[in-house]
Length: 505
Image (tube, rainbow, N blue to C red; front, top):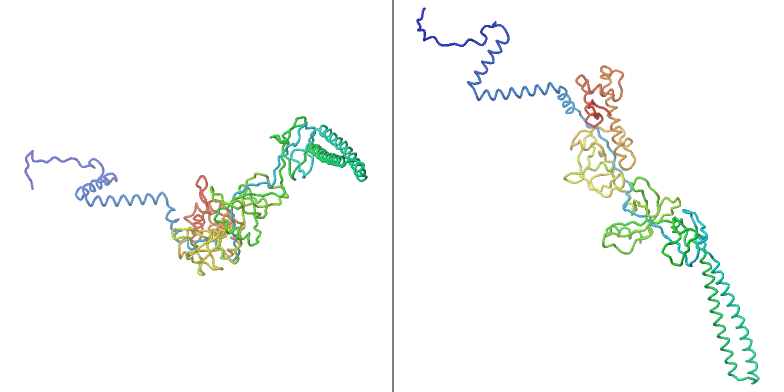
């Protein structure tokens, strides 16, 4: 059938996009598909936006999965890791010490500046700087010759006046005999009696002059007033010294016994004085500046009788034998005063006590290996243990390490002998020992669960090298081995090194 068209009736058609190309090639098919998509999008604008958004999310998820292929497996391991390994301890009954911590200063009982008491030239020093001396030891010698001469002169005057007194007493005896015979007047006898009394007064004055001269002569030997250690000399031989001069010859400090002055808040004074009045001897320990080394032990000697209104504190003095001379004058020390000891108290390790918005609490391990969060009331902290006033009973098992990853009702895994693994020195060493015990437990579980995996993937590797190997092949691990490796990583058993290579220690 023929259709007649005018020349102007023919419509203009653009060549097809794939004109001139073989129709079977992929580029032509993609171009036609893209053209169809654009036409569909133009015909359905709202629906196309939703579809394109969904396609974009799918591509993003696919990209994340391609970059981090192990993240899903790792999260699956964390979700299925089972019981959380923790460190535990048993609630105990024991003694709790009430200790007051204070800052103190080593203060000698006596510090004497040896000054001359007479003037003269210093001719001798009988000590070595830093020497230990006794009270009465001669430390220095002042030229004694002027004072010896003054003593001799006083003695001569005393001898002359003594002779004069003896002659006056003899004349008085004669006059009294003559008066008895009415041979002389009574007035002459009275005059002689006055002469004898005057001579007796002169003798007393002469004796005082002799004693003064003897004392001054003794002062030429400068002696130590106390037992102790001499310091650096402040005057050299050949210098002229005078009585009462500002600069002494040397300073002597008593070192045995030694005292420590420290202060406590006035709120604690009543407890201390009550124990002292009851006759108790309160022990005192002093530590160095870092509070790590114990210097010596002593006892509380006295409590001051007034509160310092400026600081609201009271001074106390503790006494120490200081036989080893470890306490040095003016040394700064940390003081621990044992006020009292409470017996049969319920105690837990300090790391077991957690603090939150509702107060203090602990995680108690139940027989079915789950934990329950229990609120407790705590009292005094004594070193590495805490007094529990309510909420726990002796024999309860509490979590001391790993509580930050627990919640009420969570499953836990505890060591076979928790008390043996938790035991550690007081202070911060306990937490480190608990961590070490927990790491050892996790390593043991990893070695047991991954025995076959190690033989297959990491033959001959041990320690950190084995864990690195397992981490690199984590996608091929068994379920038990993957769980053990995930627990090790979550517990901090595998820390990343500077290069971020994987688990290591």
